Image 1: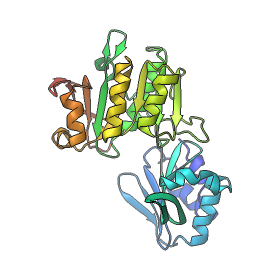
Image 2 (image 1 turned 120 degrees about the horizontal axis):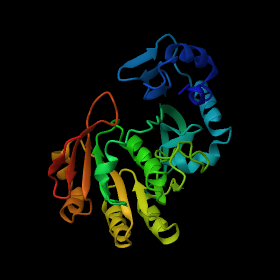
Image 3 (image 1 turned 135 degrees about the horizontal axis):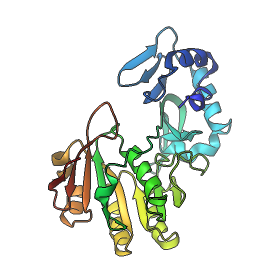
Image 4 (image 1 turned 90 degrees about the horizontal axis):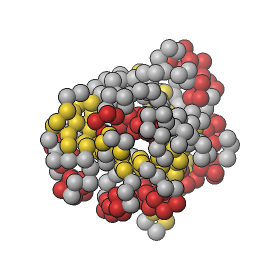
Length: 301
């Protein structure tokens, strides 16, 4: 990764300095933050900053113009959800003055904070776990549990590549509500998700799962960060159709995940046959352990 997609959307006055500071380090960079009145900061496991200059409102406007192709209104729906996606599949979280109508966020104006979350591909990171998810040529229903920044989306993306590619050659649908898995920019995946993969980008998970089974005939459906009653009801309907599901959920560890009421139902009704828990480590995508439908640790990775 060269970081060129990132450099092209930051304000001109920071480009040379960022290139110098981050040269050869792009594969380790997780995010770059811009806050009006504060230095630019980046995170690679530790926090670093360009301390001698502070971000101005004009810097922020310049950056939003670059990110939106000078058509910020075209990204209003994304921005209302707190982010926008830029070329390369990188997602930029934004904050500022929130405009609310009838209890719903309509827009975010006067954007004051921007966090460029660097999207990394780790080809082959799912190689170790894939055999444990297979039953013959079928994919077991699987839930990946991990804290933030532990690589669950990266593993999900690699599983899509493997399952839709030469490993299994199955039709895969990704419901990508926040453009993180496929990293779509204007509907086109910026990340390699496999030759037989269709993507419902920026589509609410529960709605997208039902759309997929009704019109796209997936053999495997992939969805990120499930939780809540609507997701569970949609998941039930998908499983009735005979489609395999691979999903992720937030959880610091098995015990804390099990305490969530919405997750208890998933476990008690044995919706998933495999659970993958990821480690909190400096190397995203590391597996802590695998569990079966009963929650028993049964595999040694």
